[in-house]
Length: 234
Image 1 (cartoon, rainbow, N blue to C red):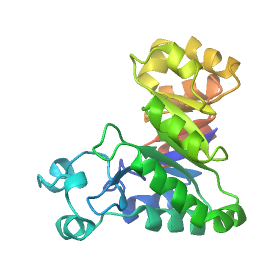
Image 2: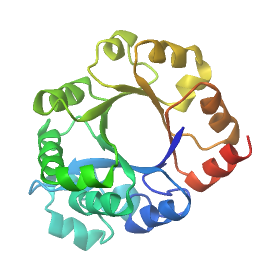
Image 3: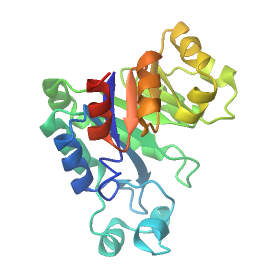
């Protein structure tokens, strides 16, 4: 079971900053997870929320603001290019989550596919895995239509109908730990379709052990160092 740092080592450091990802490396993460949005000038940046209120106490909306202004408000913002370069350099696999719905619709998927194509040789040489994830069924299918070689994960909300997961083209399915805890049989159901199992966001020892028992492939956690310690002691 591989350990992915959710927005970096975000339990200990500001989420999706260089500091969070640098320390995820130190904490023994196998890879990194991030959320991606497009700025007004079409730059893919690492940001979870639609605006900067929670992280920077500013009402600026990502989709309505250019990168230069966003950086002036919150200098720690990383671009997809910077994130890809860091992951490749550190030889850490990447989970790229696209946020929806957004005004630009599936433009973010187009940008990701273009950037991955540009870095194809470096990605291959580093031998890392890169997967695009989304709660949007249409976003996952968009990636398939643009480049069938890119790995995808269809993320599940607690209320996501099973048939949408069953008929997704994604190579892996991503339920939250709350859903898996309530319905552990879901793990076997997902595995029976030939897909990998990616579970988010797993921070407690009991849940980490449960994921190990259920054969989870990729564990996404805010606490990569702690998850590694728990697994080493099983």
